[in-house]
Every structure is written in C-alpha cells, then in structure tokens.
Image 1 (cartoon, rainbow over the protein chains, first blue to last red):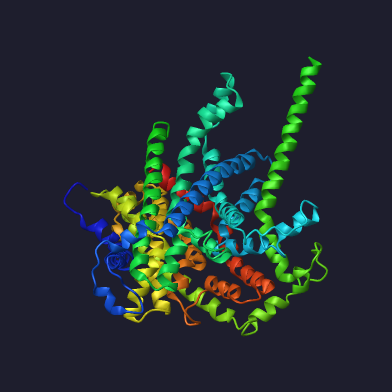
Image 2: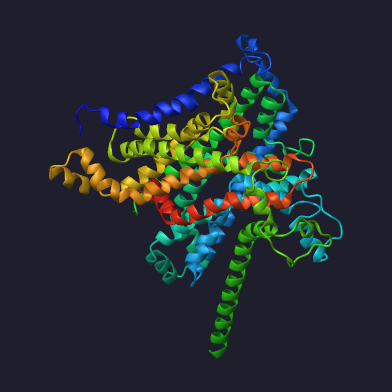
Amino acid sequence: MKGFKPSAPFLLLLPAIIVLAAVVVLPLILSLYSSFTPFRLTRPETFFVFVGFRNYLSILSNADFWWAFGRTVLLLTIALNLEMLLGLGLAMLVEKATRGQRVLRTLMMFPMMFSPILVGFQFKFMFNDNIGLVNNALQSLGITQDAIPWLIEGHLAFIAISIAEIWSSTSIFAILILAGLLAMPKEPIEAARVDGCTPWQTFRYVTWPFVMPFAYIAMTIRSLDVARAYDIVKIMTDGGPAGRTELLWTLVGRTAYSDARMGLANAMAYFSILLSIAFTVYFYNKLAAARAQIGAEW
Amino acid sequence: MMDENASARLTRRTLTVAHRVGLFLAMLVICLPGIWIVLSSLRPTVEIMAKPPVWIPQQLSFDAYVAMFSGIGKGGIPVLDYFRNSLIISVTSTVIAVAIGMAGGYAFARYRFRGKSGMFLGLMLTRTVPGIALSLPLFFLYVRLGIIDTHIGMILAYVALNVPFTIWLIDGFFRQVPKDLAEAAQIDGCTRWQAFWQVEFPLARPGIASAAIFAFLTCWNEFALASQLTRSVNSKTLPVGLLDYTAEFTIDWRGMCALAVVMIIPALTLTYIVQKHLVGGLTSGAVKG
C-alpha cells in the first residue's frame, strides 16, 4: 500500500471534484470577480468595468448591511445555544422514559422532516395576528384581549422567527445527544454514584464530557446549513417590517434580484460565505478536539 | 426511619410525575404545529377565519385536496406541475449524487492518501456556501448557458449540493464494514471490484439507502436556490410553489395547509424509514474517525 499508487483514491474522488469545481468553485470565482465590478443585470457591459474595492467600501459604510449582519449573528447565537440546551434537555427526558421510547424518538424527529420553508409557513400561520393559533389561544385563555401583532412589530417578529428556527432544529441536537447517551457505558455513572457524587456532579464530570462530541457533530451539521434561516425569514416576514428582520441572506437576495445590483450583492455574499465558513471550521475543530480527548476511552 | 422512607418515596413519585409532565409538554410543542396544519387543511375556510375561534372542528372534508389536484388550483397555482418537477429533479439528482458519493466515500473509508483530512474539510466547506450566495453566480452562468428554468440546471445544482454530505455519510457506513471481509474475499480470488460489489456493498446498502433518502429530502425541501433558478411551471418546485400562495393578496390558508401536507407526507415516510441508520452513520463516521 506504501508504493506510489495515488491513482485509485484520486480517480474515485474525481467525479466529486469535477462536479463541485463546476457548480460551486467556478461560480464562486466568477462572483468574486464580479464583486469588484459595478455589475448590474440590466446593463451587461458593466461586467467588464473594474472598480477595485468600491463595493466593499460601500458595504462598510452601509448601515443596513451592518444591522443585517449583527442581526444574523445574534439570531445564530441565540438559536444555536438554545437548541443545544433544549436538545440536551429533550434527549435526557426521552432517555429517562421507561416505556414507549421508540415512539418518543420518532416523534422527536418530527420537526427535522419539515423543510425550512414549511416551518416558516406553519409559524406564519400560527403567529398570524388575526387567525393564528397563538393569539387565539391567548385570547381564549383570557391572557390578553388584543391581537398581538407578532409578525408586524419588529422585535416580536424577531422573536417569532427565533422560535421557528429553534423549533425546527432542536431535534437534530436531541437525536445526536440521545445517541451519545445511549452509547454511553453505564459503569462510570455507577462508579461516580458510589463515590458519592451528586447528580449534578455526575452529569457535569461524567455524562457531559462523553456526550460532548455528539453535540459537536450536531453543531457541525447545523453550521453546514445555518443559511436555512433564509427560507424561514423569506416566507414569514420577507425581511419586514421595514427591514427590521432583514438577515444577511435576505439582504443579499434583495440587493441582487430586486435592485439588480449583482456586483454589490456578490460582495455582500462573500461576507455571508465567510461567516458560514467561520462557523463550520470552528465547530469542526471543536469536534476534532473533543474526539481526541475522548479517544483514549474508546 | 419510617419518615425517611416515606419522604424518599414522595420525592421519587414527584420526580416521576414531573418527568411525565415535562415529556408530555415537550412532545406537545413538537407535534402541535403539524397537527394544526393537518387539521386546518380539512376545515372549511369560514371556520379557520372565525372570531371568536372555533376550537372543535364542526365539519371536516377533503375539498382542499380535491381542488388542488383537479388541475389548476385556486388562484391559478398548478400544483401538479410543481409536484412533477419536484419529483423529477429530486430523484435524478439523488441517483447521481449517490453514485458520486459512493465513489468518494469509499475512497475516504478505504484509502490513505496525502491531504485526506484537508480534502474532507474542503468538501464540507463547499457545502457551507449559503444557497442564496451561490445562486447569484449560478443565475448569471445559467442565463448565459441557457439552462435557467430547466430541469438540467436544477439537477446540476442539487447534485453539487448533496455530494459533500453524501460522501460524509457513506464514508461512515463503509467504515462500519470490517476491512478484513473484503481482504478475505480478495485472498479467495476476487478482484477488488468484485469484492466491493459482492461483499462490501451489500453490507453497506442500508446505510447507502439512508444517504440517498437524505439527499432526496434535501432536494425536495430546498428553497433558496430553487427560488432564483426557476421561473415558471417548466421547473418550479413545490417549496417555490408554496410561496406563490403567499404572494396573493388574500392568503388561501386552507389551500396552503393542504399543499404543506402534500409536501410533508413523502418526507415523513422516508425519514421514518431511515432514522436508525442516519444517526448511526453520522456518529460512527464522526466519532471513531
């Protein structure tokens, strides 16, 4: 195997490389180039005008862009942390269940099957100020008389979007953490209990380190498609009211297709790509570290 | 002594009850939105719009589904065309992505080569590019090549979207197949090619099937790329079609709910089939790696 025979794995990977080069890498190079031009879809000749970093400079001084950027990071921070926490809680609830675990596990996966666009739609429906389930319930229970304008007021809309996002992705964490809990040997827990650990200590120093790699797998998978929030926002508020829920991705879409300013949009898109890559590399490294740490015991 | 026993019993009982209640509430939150959608698709619009709300449905019917599938639905939304497009695009791109993914996954699971982990990370990074960011240059290229709003264009894009993750999953499944088996077969006179198809492939098949289903679902659910690269009934898929409903001034909630149910049923069935293998593949590929 040591001999000079690089051809087999290379040949096997070749189709994947070709497809990805043609459909992802090449277009990205093209968009990198066009981010240095004032390219507008309506005026093709502008594709060949080179303006250097002008698009990037105009982004830097664009308040809308920075609001969208900050909002995106805020949404991701809130959503990922809560998803991790709720996923852990859900996994532990299901793991403790003595009966019907199979049914519970299937139910738990339910939100994963919903496409983001469907998640957005169903929460748009439920948060509708007039006929939505949430307001109907609140009013029937007598908690409030007024219709709460969930998707019409900026802050409430952001909360509604966060809830939709968390609802849809908590199950990924729950499933993988549950897999970790089930794969965990029982002896260390018993040993900890015999040694007089409190339940909290047992969890913190025995269970959690074991389950952590599984949580990072979930994080890595999630960070691969953080941009799915685009679909949810697009259908729930479309960035409204008055740009109050605009995320990086919806802003890119609007600049490119509604305003037809492709060059500028591509420059923005590069920010969003860098954000995604940063997330993925960060969690991938965490995963590798957690894996190495636990490696001794496997 | 008695007191201690009694209080311990009480604590345990309280904990059991709390656990039951917590579990019930969690499952309620998870299931309620879906149940509500199904219910709303079966109720007449008057009931959905009623103020004060009608909680217990008075009459249920399949009218919304009948209307949707009898040609042009309400508001002129051709659901059948969208359904056909979704099916063609998803199935074709899944088949291609799995073929490519099997080759790539096998390479990662069975060979050692220079830059392997860098290569793996590189593949994953291509997947991180947000759909909307990728759609800008693809849109431009597709217009130039004349494949905008065609099945071919969408299939190409979805194959690229699925290849990295398919490789990750299939890599994990091939790792679960012991290396010795294929080596034994080779010693017995099989070529590597034969050993693969007769020993390793059958063992990894359930895993590969779940990778395929996962790829299918990704295509079936994808929206960001589809919303920009499709324009008409030629290639619009169901998720884009759902947005058609919201573009109208009066939203047909019942019709949308019915379309949502139509979209979710294939996904529900398929995910149920693969759930076990999916978790196994993800964790084995990533933890023991």
